[in-house]
Length: 84
Image (cartoon, rainbow, N blue to C red; front, side):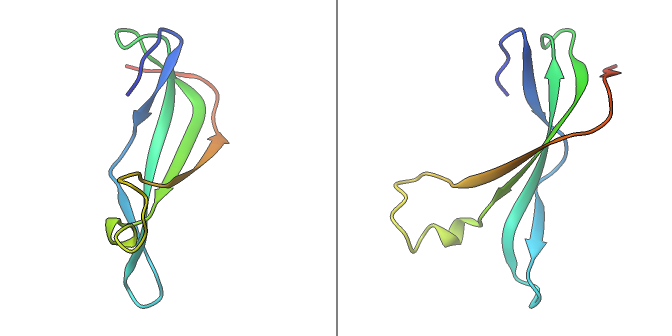
């Protein structure tokens, strides 16, 4: 979580496995919520992000030099809701 006074992304749930038709895990999905303001007075916004990543065993066969590839999808949802 990186906070700069304008806002920050906060993890909003656990990493969820995504299974193929054979029941094998082929990716993971993580949900993030953008909060405006500071860590002391955050305000939930209408921005959400879904982050997708491959399982670690997929990196073993390729030379990614320890880097993790992810894909993110940002969505707009409800209007501002105060964070308590």
